[in-house]
Length: 226
Image (cartoon, rainbow, N blue to C red; front, side, top):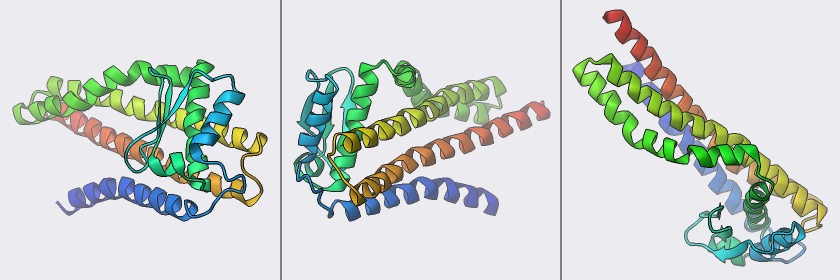
């Protein structure tokens, strides 16, 4: 029982720590202004235009760190602080989201694969535990296995997300440095913001993998009992 509680404590703490870290890092560098004095929306627009993406819109989103790129509407949405602010943190986040727009333009393979997985991953996330619980309470290993397969689709989505996010961050740094939107010490600050954000995806993937492996071991045990 103690081991069971420790396990769930660990998988609960991993994403929480990652989230606290990204919020702390973002808050720290949101107080550091860029020498260019450009807002996040202006930086996003500049990078988009420099990459021939005049058709991609930059809009103000809602909520803290709600920044994202929508490939369907070709829109970069920046949270209010990043949209209007002139901080290094906002510049890093804005450039990162534009990185996704550039991936979309170049038909980046991992991004395409992730988009294709979305409906499967959504179904897996919503139904996997239903079949797993049915399998546990009815001792039907086939139902349990179906739940594992559905969960594996969600784990695959998490894994594919990693190269997509890391690549977007790499593109972001290349763009803001080459265009001269940030300089010197600002580059190191921006990298810290992007690295902290990337760790949240790593944490989510790690937790998903650990949980999937645990369920696989349970399934193996069920087979041994048959």
